[in-house]
Length: 216
Image (cartoon, rainbow, N blue to C red; front, side, top):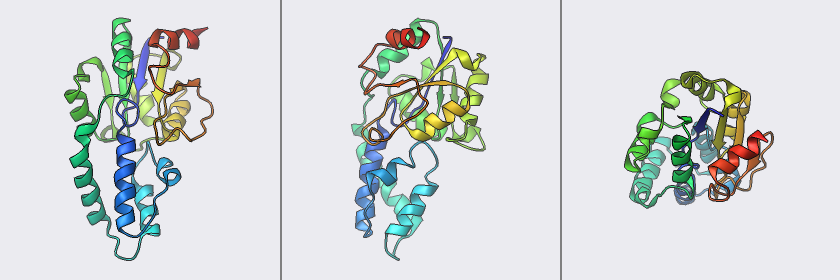
């Protein structure tokens, strides 16, 4: 193994559980009920399908611009509570100490992820960062992972991906990459297929143990 590619939202920091809480509460204020199942199906890709669903389940007073403004304001009030997921820092430091190249491949914007990476002092670990600003299509399309692999200068067989969502897994598999799933509170109920194995968190197994299991 020569390289590791991490997803960001929901994997490194569980931004997704907080987003679900915010979207659920504000959708309720508009007269609709947003279920965990409907929300989790949109994780890892664009928010377009989520807003389309919210429009269907809310009343005629729904306005997307107003809704987005409210969700962003509510999220900004709470995002200071966010912390790194358990075991993430150990994985990143171990991969770095082992001389592996590292990339981040996310459907979010560069501004969004770099803000968090800088805050948590992680940005220096990543040789490559690919975001929605770099591609025509985000996950589940494989372009983010294909670009990241090419930029790392490694073969697809030499890469391990860590993901938390079905859209991310679909993208990784389509790029020909082995993928370990580390679902969060809002993706844990989903069924994953084609991945190497699943961890409840990165504290379940050390990074070296993951690599050993993948190379046996």
